[in-house]
Figure 1 (tube, helix red, strand yellow):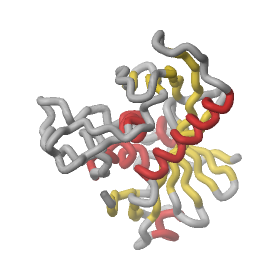
Figure 2 (tube, one colour):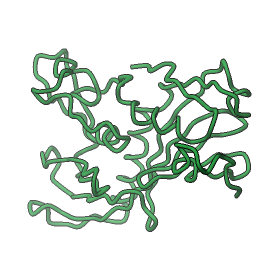
Figure 3 (cartoon, helix red, strand yellow):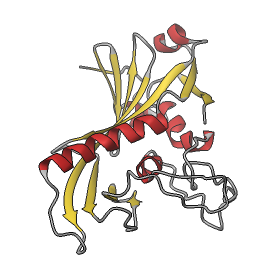
Length: 233
């Protein structure tokens, strides 16, 4: 692994210092996730490591079994993949080798939630509940902690008289983990009427959800400017 070359006295030096080059992959790690840029394909991946702690609600008799844990962790990965991946592209410009190579191309962006036993980005409090139970699911961004439960992979109608809009909680919480901290269903939100949006009560992506990711991409390496190109609902 080699370090990125940059002006150590520059305004963005503290961010460039987080970037390494490992063969064909450019890595940029902060406290909550790691961005990977593939030098061969131009693809952009955000890898987020979750360490699970397993609990049960007082309405549940049995603890999580090994199989239930494995199924839940895999289902989390797949639900985020289905909601977020294959729908977002970026463009790149600038004078860096990476920017010149992929200028004019649509670079795919994906999100991966990876379970780990150590060196986690996030601690996940996973509570086993009865099917259909409604515990509070939320992200404590400041402390890098996610609170979820076993019912959070179910499709739930959260908005009545909204053309059968449903939501799966886990991909919504992934949006908070990526840095979109607002809940658009709050009455004070300017997007409260956008009920189909993932960060409201639905499952559709919006460009505004990628604001934090776009900021991060633009401090990974010098002379490399990323612009959000497209978001498919």
